[in-house]
Amino acid sequence: MKTLDMRGSPCPLPVVNAKKELQKSDVVIVLVDNILAVQNLQKMAEGKGYAFSYIQENESNFTVTIKSEGASELPHTDPSEPVPSDSAKEGSVILISADRLGQGNDELGGILIKGFIFSLGELPLPPRLIIFINSGVRLVTEGSNTITDLKTLFGKGTKILVCGTCLNYYALTDKLAVGEVTDMYTIAGHLSSAVKLVSL
Image 1 (cartoon, rainbow, N blue to C red):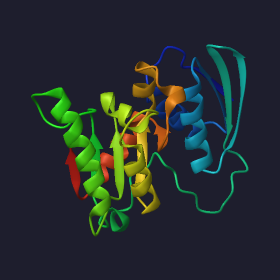
Image 2 (image 1 turned 90 degrees about the vertical axis):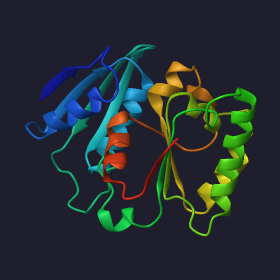
Image 3 (image 1 turned 180 degrees about the vertical axis):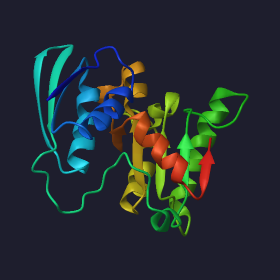
């Protein structure tokens, strides 16, 4: 059994280091200081078929336990791993890093990003995946005028991933209205394996 003290470590270090340690140990305990890190570790563990549990000591202390021994032999989909190349060919991956489109007038930029996201849902082949980072996470949170369009895309099969560190930075963690919180390791995996990548 190995204990990793990852308190104060930025995303994606808790996930990356836990994965490395699980190659050597059957049981890994990870100490983290925020619930987003706990959720990212849980997704990684469940994606690999590992047992997962955690204890919250207080607002900023969590003890996560991951056990690899006895993991199911059935295949699992690890959300932090790159998408297989066959799947990657179907549809594009779009990275949205701001809550407006283009440089210049902010109000115009807001109108343009709204129109762009709406238009994605009207395409014959919607994007396979949309990733939101930095101020782009404002587009997936309560009060955004893009929520309805994003839910339409989700209903058509588009996966929506949202940077957890970015939500936390903008104090929007509890305001997520559409999509799934993820970490930078997962984002890097998807971007590096994308066949068709559009970055805004």
